Length: 446
View 1: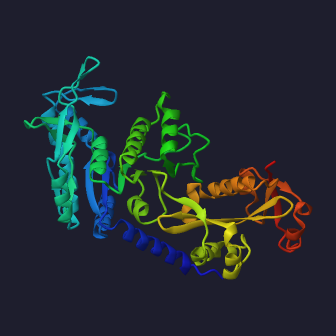
View 2: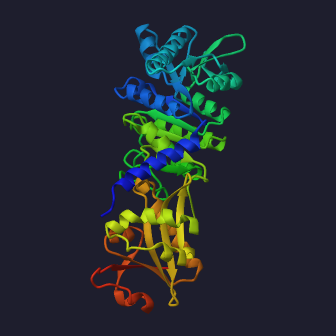
View 3: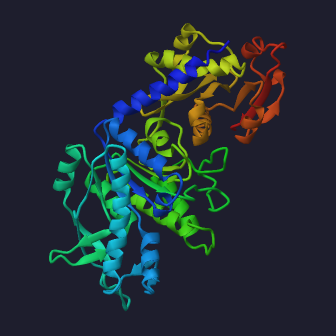
């Protein structure tokens, strides 16, 4: 029987591999104040400390919108917004500054409770947003410069810098700045490996967004990952819509900032659901993600299998063989057919495999399709099938077929249709087992 210890070992190997990959890297975490005020906040703080203990450098940018709203309301001050931006008056700016530092101090205190030293500083130089289209934004500002050398020195000492959403000009005049933009700029200037936006209601689903057909969805109908082109397509598909869906405008802003961050050097940006316990370590140390990742095109790739991959591919196939989804294969068989196989490599790990066997009758057989369960939500399987279909087309095959006992529905979703055993090439037909009774599904190419 299949040894469940293998699953546990693979998860541990993933953790060790990611710790090695990201050790000494910089990650920036934006904590929306909806998360800071939630029951999951203390759990996220503990996870941040565990991540820091693993050798990663962490910078935290807290959101303070709710706290600012509360303090201004309690002081009987009203405010206006234009294009989603708060107009900060001279009367309001002292209270805005107090609110921003209140939130930052709460995070610092929570980290101190876990034995971590955090520092709140004035590393952000800002300038006034000015007058735009006749609107005077007064004490609302934009980021002008970051004191990256000072921030790097703090990180090197093992401290965690915390950035309130306040910046100062060269004369010491304070400005209220966007915390989500600040997180993006910090990640860019520090050359962060990852930027996290942790927010409640941060899940992108097909019920709240108009998702293009070209974007793969998970089984829960969420978007696990987007490259830069897909990110822009998703933004374009939703920008013009008028909607009352909570947080949709905020998520669109995060998508735009995520794309900008990746284009400017940040490797990956993650929009995470802050209501989910453990979402941060799952995103960093495993392939099991809970939110949406924006990435450059070098994240995960299909390539030809080589001999060194064979042991890893056999391990990947093992649970599928145990469930009788795949036929058993030996190391010798895979080496003999090594040119027929492709693999999906992600962060140095083999996460999927598949093969294309060609016959003289211009029929191609797609076989040995296996995707690591931890990555099943990322749409890797369809990408592998599409890759092999395109390969068969280039090889002038008339059709491709599959033999399956348990995954006929999945292949039908990829466009395959039921066919008969008699349609198989003669050299393949002789290996068809009546006892196993595999169904034949075919996709016409010509």
